Amino acid sequence: MTEEQPRTEASTRRVKNVPERRCLVTGEVHPRDVLMRFVIGPDDLVVPDLDNRLPGRGLWLLGRRDIVAQACAKRAFARGARRAVTPMTGPEGESLEAFVEVELFRRAVNALTMARKAGDYVTGFEKVRGALAGLAGLDRSKAGPRSVEPAALLCACDAGADGRQKVAQLAAHVNEVERIDIFDAATLGQVSGRERSVHGLVLPGGAARQVCDAANRLMMYRGDCAPADDVVTDEDLME
Image 1 (cartoon, rainbow, N blue to C red):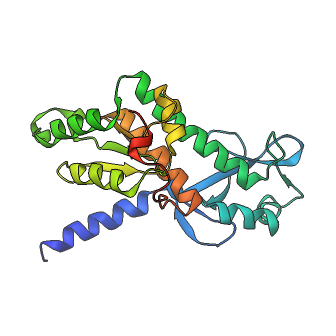
Image 2: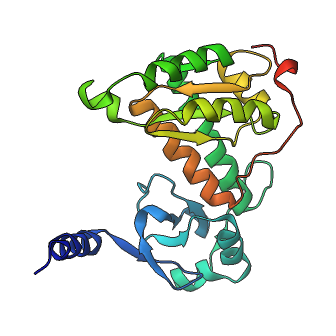
């Protein structure tokens, strides 16, 4: 038996132990953590269960907006529930797929806000640069459990390409940094109590992990997370 074989077999066993569900639209089986759960609520309304906690039989979809839209248009929820059901609409009359996106965005912003309240969020180019320099010089393998967690580097999606590149170059010298470019300058400013903000960093730890998880879920749902270029310059945003 080669050295690689035991690792391969162990890996296969771990994958088999991961809970899986079938997507109602694609018919594909995936681990639950890449799927989105829906349940039938009062009045036979289909509602999202983003925390996987609501009672009732789960109806599972790939966590993408286009898949949710297809499920609504092709009556996939009715087939899965085996009865007539109606996708819910949001408080502003928005469709189910639009409501889910709004909720995922709200959760991502809330995770960032909680990081700031916990004192784990720094903003402004100079502060972010200093924090990244500190992480670059830290031997994280000897600095305790918190240090092995990823940091979350944020740059406004409507910031200029030059500003994003400068921070990305600094982050290249730090291990375990996830970059998040899905928030605009106004949203980052709202989190930090300013009119606008371009650069932010969530320090390594549980808060950064929560921000990354929420942001990644939103990006997967949207299916398009490419930042815009040359809309707002760093000079326009006083940090």
